[in-house]
Length: 169
Image (cartoon, rainbow, N blue to C red; front, top):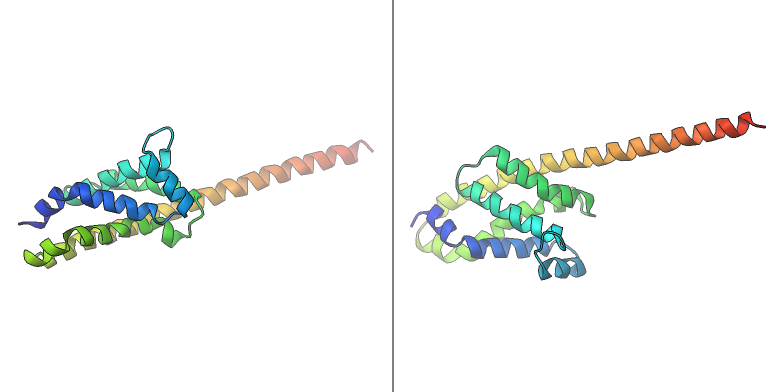
């Protein structure tokens, strides 16, 4: 059996396990909230993660379309970039796929001698993690840029206020 066929047949179990591992990176109260509901409006974080990991998985198995990979990673990383995660943990969700796939496929990989193919699959996951890191850094830079602009605007308003009050005395 080819690895791609195996990964396709076990897609649902791997995605469920990947999703659970991602949610485990959150504090227990947040994780429990995210697990309860995948509604787009009442739980947009869990909905987005669930939806986008499916797209990422499909792309890893098929075309590796860089635009689709970038868009899906960006949607997840925008969420994680504003949450209280250090960069390594913010992108760790990508690497959780390795653990999920290994847990679900270890017997089949061993029995069918698919180690070489599986290592290539894990290498593609590593490449995805590198892309995720680049996206995360771009998001963090944008957040810092926004904060600097807010401080500059506040400073400008304070200077104007001081000029007005000192000019009226």
